[in-house]
Each structure stands twice: as structure tokens, then as C-alpha cells.
Length: 111
Image 1: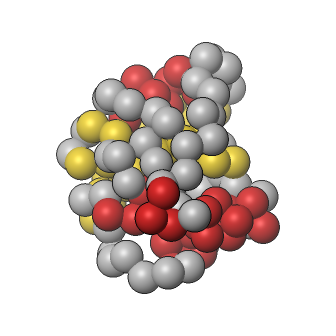
Image 2: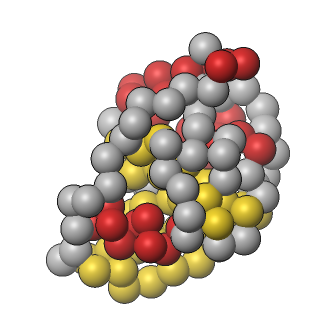
Image 3: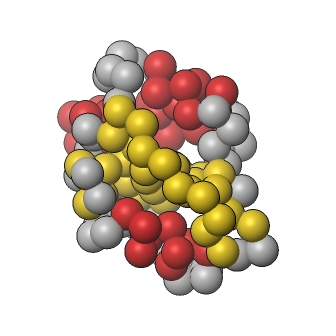
């Protein structure tokens, strides 16, 4: 499983599309086995969900996200976790333990 966390360095960002980078965590048997960070290639409507899908991402974690992005992720069968805060790796580990749940927070300017 591949988990992407929209981040500012190692901290989860409040808005998915405007993050500085995506921390990518590869997991196997509920444990992180590899991690990397890629810069955000740019915020264009509809681009980032397809970009992350092409990378093989199964789960996206962010503080907030616009409804359009959520819809595209849903269409790609990528699980969306919003309302997350704090350290990105800790959030990915909490997700793998089944302890991180989405709050459903959609950014108001992108409903």
C-alpha cells in the first residue's frame, strides 16, 4: 500500500493543493517499509489526484481538501483522509493501525 501525505516538510498541511511536498510511505503488513518526499508539481484543478494515482497511491492524507479533488480520488478508488494534523509519518502510522479516520473536512473555497 502506498500512502501520500500532503505536507509542509514533515508537517501535514491544511490545504492539499497548496502543500509544499507529498511525503510518500510504502507499507507492507501494516508497517512502513520505505519513505520518500516529492515536491508538489503545481496546483491545477484535477491535476494532483491524477498525478498521485499515476504514482500508485492508495490513500491520501491531508488537513483539508476541495470537493473536486475528493470526487476525483473517489473515482480512482483512492481513500481520502482529511482533518489530519501534526507529523506526516505519525499520521501514516496511525492510519496503518486503524487509528486515523477522516473528519470529512472540505475546504470552503472549493466546495
